[in-house]
Image 1 (cartoon, helix red, strand yellow):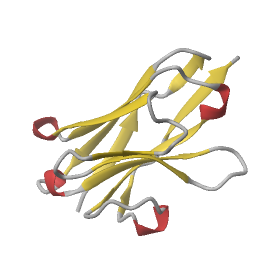
Image 2 (cartoon, helix red, strand yellow; image 1 turned 135 degrees about the horizontal axis):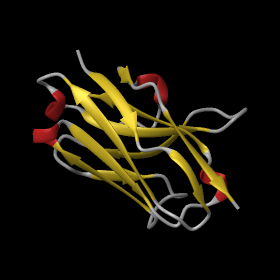
Image 3 (tube, one colour; image 1 turned 180 degrees about the vertical axis):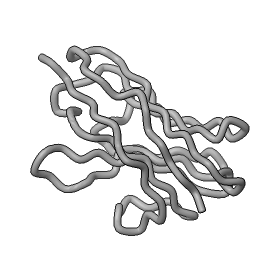
Image 4 (cartoon, helix red, strand yellow; image 1 turned 90 degrees about the vertical axis):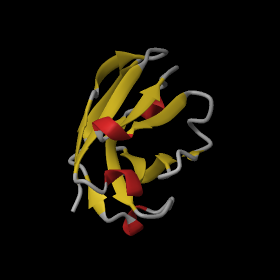
Length: 121
């Protein structure tokens, strides 16, 4: 069992930065691939970034070069550093866990409650 809690969202101006955190409970955290998905109003949940149990990272094309995912296993936390934010990044951001990397939200086993990121132009 893994429980995930996101934090770090907020209101930021376009071009600014935020760092989201995904804190996990459970002794098997290090064996899971941790993902970030975003969901804008009226849209489906979309893959943003993921990090495998062996620290291999994956990014959606829309965030490559702007977002960085990292993990701190002793702290049971995954971070999403978001730079050069754009108005279209406005969404609820969810972290999710699965034993394997997947770009599809339906394959995730555990989910957090989400954190809102809002961009002002």
